[in-house]
Image 1: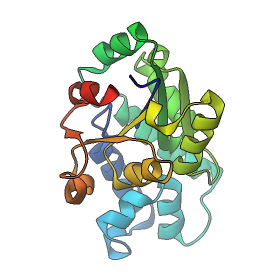
Image 2: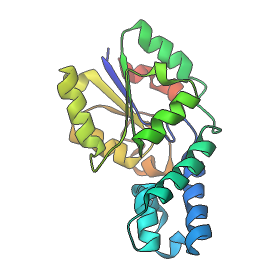
Image 3: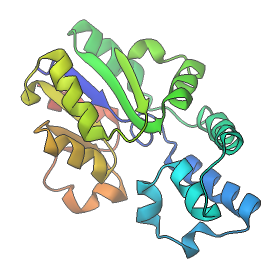
Image 4: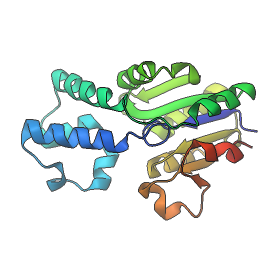
Amino acid sequence: MKKILILDFDGTIIDSNYVKENSIIEYIKDNYGINIFNLIDIFKLQSLTRYELINLAKKSPISLKEKKDIDLIINSKVTKARLDPFLLNLYKYCSKLKIKIYLVSNTPSESLKMIIDKLKISHYFYKVIGKKSNLSKSNIFSQILKDENVKPFNVLSVGDNIQDYFASKINSIPFHGIYSNSLKEISNSIPTSFSLIGIISSLY
């Protein structure tokens, strides 16, 4: 039985990937008159943060006001997105078995905490870790292993993006994918499900 469960946020516990992507695309078009896809493809879009995308579009560093503006727009829309209906049951299951749930996301830290507070799910997680500075998910996963003093096989990472998979693999942490186009090419080599209800078997 695993001791630690690491969950991604967007596309894993909440159906918010399209909401976020569409929001940033519209923001850039409305404010800078630029179609971001004239500069990058969809895969590059998914690998950059909202702030990096604005930097790219305006060709200069994002201002504090712009950060607040885009955060407000995205946060408002994400809180209306669909949560995985099994999330509550998963929380209860892990609580009963004393499995600590970490929420680790590339969403900016303040935005992530605001959203989960708004959704009233903050108590589901032992720790919530959003994006800060240039700290990568692989670095965060490594730190969790050290802080918890556990071996990688005692941890399960769950995500919907190939970068979640790589961050897990670098740390030798077992990975369970939530099906997405990003994981399509490796879906036959990893356990994959369409929702959180499918990850229970991977916790053993």
